[in-house]
Image (cartoon, rainbow, N blue to C red; front, side):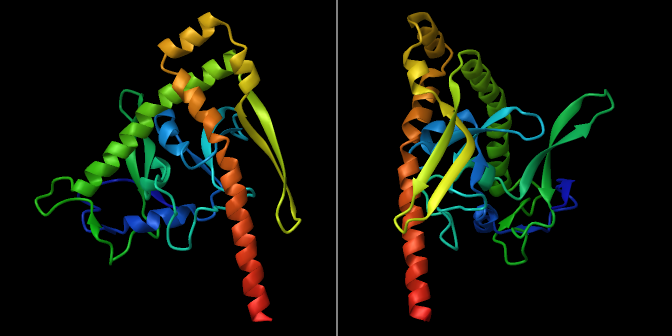
Length: 247
């Protein structure tokens, strides 16, 4: 990866194939999301929380696999889902920080100039012939804006959940149909019992702050773990059938 600040002039000739953005998530079992994505994500993925190994801070993710580098939604050519997280769709663009003369740090749009999404055959341009931002770049800017603005609300949600002692570790001990055991740990979710035990004032606070539906989205999404198990069993069955045919 080689990130540089995007320049409409210097990078005007670049061509982007956005379909290849999903390929970058082919071996990503955790994809970070912001709270504005919770409702859509909950219809397909388990929403979990994990600690940053360097800072120890929690962040929300969608869980794509039951082992590291496993994305059970990756079909080989795309993610077979109705909703692709914003942090995948924005690639090969990233948010960086630029030092200003005032000493403050401002967000800047960066591009990974080594990304496989950049290809001569790409159908998307950064700028139009008249030098204005292309519709594709405007879409990317909208996605990045949503991610940046959503970070504050995401941090508020996590801080509130921690203050109410609602985040708890989850451990998955799974036995696949072929008898293979899987042990998944290091993830966190909403403790449903503690949530239901909250007094009326705290629940009302969550409602007034727009956080109550987010908690419900996380709780409902845990049922998607069974879908991941189903997908893993199907993949194991296909692999077994392929090996039998090879023999």
